[in-house]
Image (cartoon, rainbow, N blue to C red; front, side, top):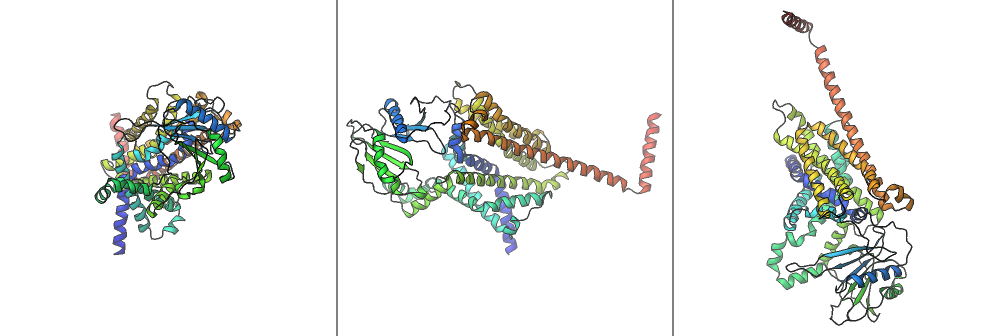
Length: 550
């Protein structure tokens, strides 16, 4: 009974992983890049200045408020984002009023020049946020459709992780087993190691991803059990917000935010300001909220100070009251996003995300490797289904990283004044991916792997050169300036290109080894023929030569 159950789980694990494997690979790779979406956006806006200022928070707040007073008049809410480890530029933001038929207006963020106080004129780009949103919005599809596709794939991913644990009797001993150069056993060991090494992360990231859209997936249950008022109240319990006054439409002059900031120092005893939110700006009800670095998983009421922007009086705040369900939901949300993480933890998230991506890729390759010997014996060649899976594997596992590189190339090479430039960055990526998905259909599988790995190595190794030819944010400038955002990108491109080059080299060596093994096998077969058979073959060949002479 146990063996039958384990076999059924093995069958389920294999086919579920195959059916949604390519979508999961896309979700994991783009989601992993999303852990550095702010850094990616800064690299894709090379017009931003190098970070070389040593300016106090008070000066930064004065610069930001002056810009907002000039360019965001009539907007109820303003935001000021101070430089931090991830994005060392001063930024301001505000949300425009909603257009007819829409619930929310467009949110605008502007990067400011510290010296002049003006907006930095950056090129139009989708930046890192576009890549981050792809892993759950799938870009071209409507949000309703994409959320359900992502939810379906996430559920199957969770089941695949669970069944993967079930089918391995010796999961921990498998972790320490690696049979290199053994073909199918080697790929199986790679898949096992990648699965076990970050198993808690795989559980967390998949389950928490399902919680993101609980009101979408549980919509029927929610609507049947609550009315509109109860529904809004339930959302407030799960997503509590800081209470603030609405605009009274009575104009009043606000105090300087830098002056109000002095009030926070008596509460915080440090200068660790993260961002500022302003409500009912230039109104008698104007309020300013000063926030230190916080997340839902590490929420501390002392990290927020609310001040009346007209009188300068500190406003006593009631702490956000999280329900049990709200705490669990927001805790998983923060874990999924890595909101609490510093630079080291963010890199750990990044590498574990890559391990998850590689786990999916190794599982897809394992499916074709297991069936290849049998498929190669067929007189008409491999089946259509097998060839389709191999084609999608090559076009996705290698093709998608190349397409993402093309997204970065488009950012550097498309004309700066091009209409819908940001949209065309994404178009270039998906057009490239489509070509790379089709290309393996016209090449033998082994050659397609080798050629696309070589292409991946070339495009990533060439990116720092293209960056140097098109901007001044290259290694020759970024390293002396110690701007590790720009320098880190070029260095990462070189490392990724080197990894692809090594993979291409290993594939070529493996292919050459297989060819030599086949030739050696044929030679051994010829040498092992009986003398009588060898003599008869020689006689037949001699007779054929005589016939040709005649």
